[in-house]
Image (tube, rainbow, N blue to C red; front, side, top):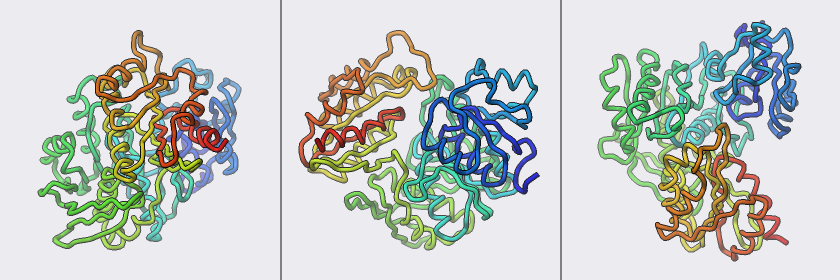
Length: 464
């Protein structure tokens, strides 16, 4: 067995290997020397990157893709029971491993930092990965998005630290035993899996309860859900709690955030001393993510001034207010925001970065269940834009819910006074936006689905 590879992971087969979470684990395993194989529904740059690392990637799902000698089949919660490769795994008695268990096995023997929260996980995990790498600590990391710098969502490092994005959506973050856990915020989301805030709190309490003895919880002192979680877990034995934020009671207190175009300057008070550093992405929420990353690194014993300087090297994550280009005097920016809180934060960030510009949004709702529960709030968030185009709901892993369409969002937006247009044919959006946009405008493609593909197409139309 190659060093660092759990026995069950010597010859893993990933169903849905091109997914953000799955591909990261596959990349780490290939770099550790495992014989990785898998399948995905379509060709992608991720599939090509995995092949370049030595993995076997099949396109489409078929029983024959699964080799008889596979040591396990790795799945996410999105994989359905009738998937032919999963069925064949049962026939061959090949163990089936959830993605989170596979990731947990890669952290064994290391110093894990697990980043959780309803929003901001990818950005905060990425900030830590970049800063720790910049400091020469050579961490391993697994992130739900590609870093703008290194251009990857995961790597196997030789250092002792492993930074991982911890997904609460299906409770899979209960699998990890972190030395440091970060909780950025706690809100109701993932309505197919959680029926109430009490269930959300219970789930996050379980996650925090998995922190190793004498480990640290880094948690927001500002966000109401995080504050309530802190109240619930304060009495856990052998748990150090470090709060951060703008609250006067925060252990790592934000003294000032100054937005300077597409960057921010942040000053914090830590152990009675002022520390100022730059965050190379706009928006108050991203500045606070950087402070959470700073607090987590300090909890591992890394000097704060070194971390602060290294955090300035972070240049963003794909799809997190990522500038896609400029044409005809119009900038096109991509946002992954799909929850009303995220949408509001990104729209406010863009308002702050370019207060004189018109802001045009192309929004694609993500999931029928989320739209059913939060469609009104999504529409209200769009009122922050000067004009919006709203697409049909991107279903992802869900089947349609009768009566739940984008109309729910559009009606709420119009009630809030927003200028909103429904577009059912996604292919027509570039032409629609090119007809609306004027020099100096900002166009924001927003959502967790394939709306991201429209950015380059919009730029092409603007250029023609």
